[in-house]
Image 1: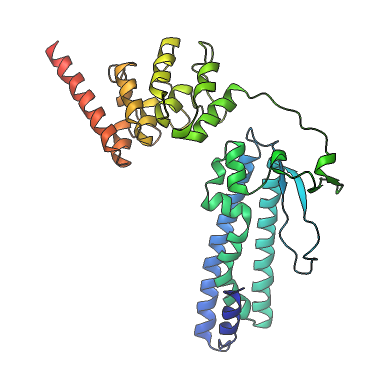
Image 2 (image 1 turned 135 degrees about the horizontal axis):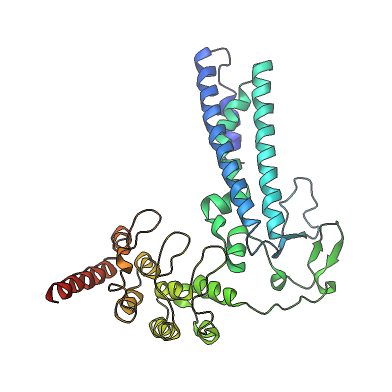
Length: 336
């Protein structure tokens, strides 16, 4: 409102009969709206990907945006949705409203000569886009990479059942209103190994790795996540959590393979290099024989080695450790 009112006041002073002003407004409007349309398409594609992820059936409770004429004292009713359906529905609505707005605004300009809409939307268009929670989550908060319940709540602003108060009112997909305390008790789902793995990754350096380490076995030590093909060795090599080095050594004794690559072509050494985990890199070099095994020579999908990534990310201690290990290996080869 603080931006829109001054803008409305200013655009009314524009001379709609000046061809130069009209031309500049058209160019500005077309440029801005092209960027918004392309952004909306990207958001839709990202939403489609999220709707097929393992979190697609996560039940969220969304607070609807405030309505201008709504009773300020009325109790807010949250909408119950599945995450996958919510993001695709919101993305479709964003595209349709964007296209409709363009047709309406440009149509009025062409047939009625109105320039106020062109000027207003050239300035307000980007603000309106980023007021959309889905657009904000995907474009600003890397929402397209949300892989856990915690990430989804942080980036998309929804709540899960445990976040609700007993007196909160919920509206389901059929429009039925229910008080939370009257909802059926949620079925407690036992965490899968992949859940433990991703939870550990989410908590990074502050992670309690004990549950994951306890669940490790020779059968799952080289487990790959469904979406990105992450392994326990990759994650433990990167997070630099307390006792993660010992956990890496334990994985090695179980048959952990540091040479496996993920969807980006990264092996565990790439992970340690990117995330600046010196301990992880040292364990891979010393216990896994990463240099002798040639892990340092592996190039990812962008043609980068672990050393390239360490230097690019300015993780100088990891880069120095890799360079020393590579030099020592070359010296050893010459001596033999």
